[in-house]
Amino acid sequence: MDEFFGLLSVFSLDSCGCAPNRFENILKLLFALLGLLIVMGVTEFCRRMRRLRDKHMRRKEQERQRTRLNEAAYSSTDLEESSRSVFARRYLEDSPGRVDSTFLDRISAPSRGSEASIGSSQASTESSEASTWSSQASSGASQVSNNADAVKDECQKLRNTLNKGLSRFQQLMEHQLKSALQDSTEMTEELMKLKKALQEAEKNERAALETCRMLSEEQNTTCVVCMDARREVVFRGCNHFATCSTCSAQMQRCCMCNSHIVEKIKVYYS
Image (tube, rainbow, N blue to C red; front, top):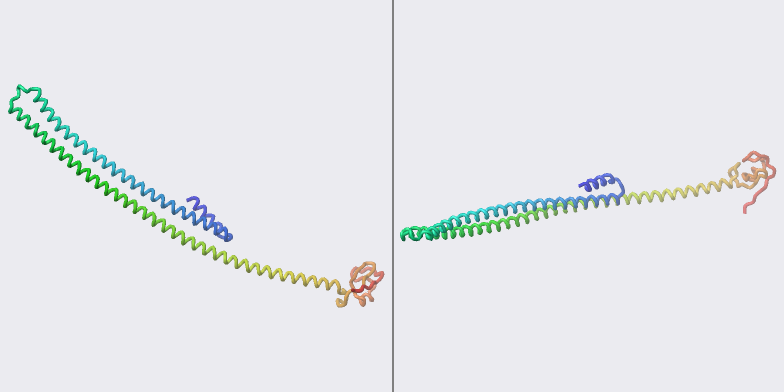
């Protein structure tokens, strides 16, 4: 969660930056969302499986307690019947001379009846135990099938949740990719416009420089007095080359520095 909010803050801070960094931040945010959805789904699945396991363990413990109670009841009944028959037999063996045949018949009859009752009670106990075990087996099978169905339902719910998250993630990624592509296209168009403007400015600058060079050359070869004829005379003394032959004939001092002209030298162009 901390990584997700950190990426979200980075994305919000860099949203006004260049397109590549923004695209990388978008991808990081989308992968963080996908990881968060997967972690949430796995956590929910583990929690539900833990609940099912605890429920199954409680049911098994209840079945064990019922089995122990049935075994305890069966052992107590069997012990009581067997103790009665053993007591009667020991009494007959200890005093055979003092007991007549009718008494033996009375004693033996109850003992035989008790043995029959023991056999019938044992048979009924075994049948009840068999029915108990069959009912427990059927209930256990139904519980296992119910648990399997519950696990299948949980897996299906988790699969549906993951599919929804993946579809949402895909939609968000497509939207972000479209927006990033649109931004990159707009930026490319702006860069092309800026490049054209720079090229036009460079051309204008070159033209202006050429014009300035031509003007400077023209000014350097034009008479500074009449501004029409070419410069032809150099003033000796100050060595200024500024006037034509017509204008220099009327001058006694230099028009540039106002110094006395010693000699006028005419220059011929080749």
